Length: 195
Image 1 (cartoon, one colour):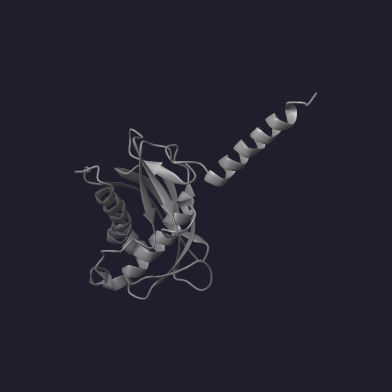
Image 2 (tube, rainbow, N blue to C red):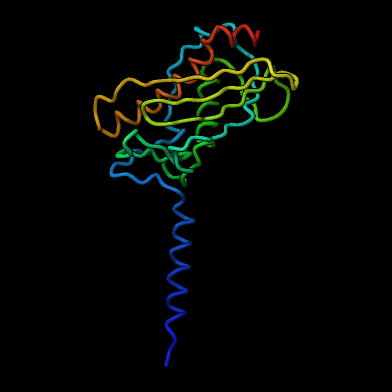
């Protein structure tokens, strides 16, 4: 008589493997795929002449929000999920990694050089407190030579979605990246502390 345990163990191992491969969401009835390769910054670098050529160390992005998954975020009622990746053909990317590379692209579009190590003019750290497709709340910490020079809480609200079309929602999500960069660079207190 054969034991049923090997089948049960095999089934459990397959389920655990599938969960590891698939990651942690997002899970929603509608999924919008975002990837940093398709993000095209719409920031005019002439608006930020005083930052041209400056070097920022984008040291960390920490996601403390309770409304995201490791690999995505949602609209407020969780009917639309945003799945993040490097490119259309790559595996999913964690929220913090996606935003690091996408914000690097946004800051560089504004004329700022972003580094992950080396010589720099200031070090930026972002801590996400809440993230949906309608708004992002985050704290930015700026240090210079190891000394805190500025800390501020930001709230960026996006215009209400006029459509549930995936292409429209995708472009709106990329617009949030531009809004994050613009909001930071337009902040007069940040400019004063940095300069």
